[in-house]
Image (cartoon, rainbow, N blue to C red):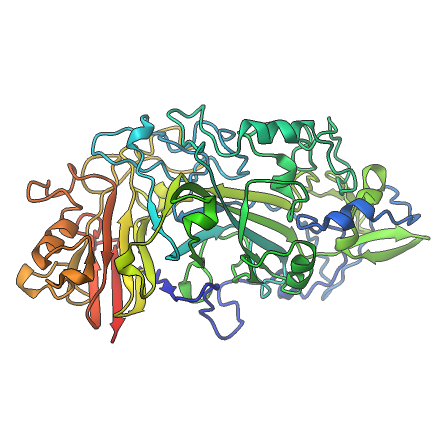
Length: 581
């Protein structure tokens, strides 16, 4: 219930904290023992300059030896062995809803983790495709909802990432890349063995192109020379039509269908470099928000990690009057420990920006599962996988549409309000989330428009196999179904909707709704999710998809909730709209 997001009109990340403190985390360097040590752990080369990776070939003569690095640690007569384990982190989109390669599975785990892309995520994550009828199982693409976004509207993008982010997290270097692509050939698919994002021709070009051999691949044995083989994908495994080399490196040096939205980094000084090597006036570059390690949660103050995307016009997106598109979020994480090499018999610090093919194979400062000697008459084995260190994760949405804004809404901002989450309690939905409006605290002007819209599935049953989580789909109404509505409440502490004669949220002014509707029509439409007077009390016969059109509001503060999912004994689905004159 503490989750509250704030949306602003600016096309920038929302900075919702003032004091850079870590109330719920203990950075490794500040453990009570105050252990100071050197450790050779690879730091990332995900974001790479083409000229840097191809041309850097320093002739450093060093001898890595057995990599049994001697580390002496003394603290109050206590010897502490610190083993740094591989980061097994994930990233999940919640707004708009990320698929994590799901389509319409009734199981808790996805059926095919290579259907459209390689997420590197847990099999339990993701949301099923949205559908338009109360009985659709998602197997008919004609019944997929394909959420509608108006040109230049503001879409809140929210996600969780497991292993930390932001400059205030001293343990990691992290980067996020938000991108979108549009094409008439995009398909969600009708079963879990099909679907299309990138084209067949794009994958064929990747398969026939020689990989960039200036890149750092550590001691990994890449089994081929095409761009389908990378340090993270040494065997050239295929995931949909994505090109593994493009997935793992940014900015990429070959043509690809993705358009940049934002690059968010723990090292803001990278922005000047990025603008130099890959200029893009439509891309925002700036700091990423803080999150702590090993935690799929929020940033400071309990707010979600998010970015406000100003949706392009369809002409900008695809050169047409409307577009089919998908959104992609990539997350790269590397530990902040330094890379040390042995040169002329001495240990020297290596700038991880300079890691390239010179340090591959036997010269790699990082080896799989090395042994270390700390002078205690015993050696210890570290859990390091060079294919996954400095690792790239991603999530993608199902297909949505970008359309022109109505002529009657040519003034003021358009704010999208959607619903995140899926059916189940917090344990059953994890690493997805429970239901909530996004944003659930919106502050606008009376000249602005709000586009209420949400998607849902009829197959979120969360059946076995449960993977490493709990099965089941606790909730109201028919099992497996997502349903939502909006009714006004007079105070956020209330859990009973206001009677019709008390509702102030909607008005009879037809100029304040597109399409034009009366107050009574709006109350009924939003309360029944568009079904009308014959709606089931638990919305079972309503569509999982709802498009409420555009609305303006008189100045005031309005609170609202969902009658079905606001199970106020243990969870809430409420929101607040503040309108200034």
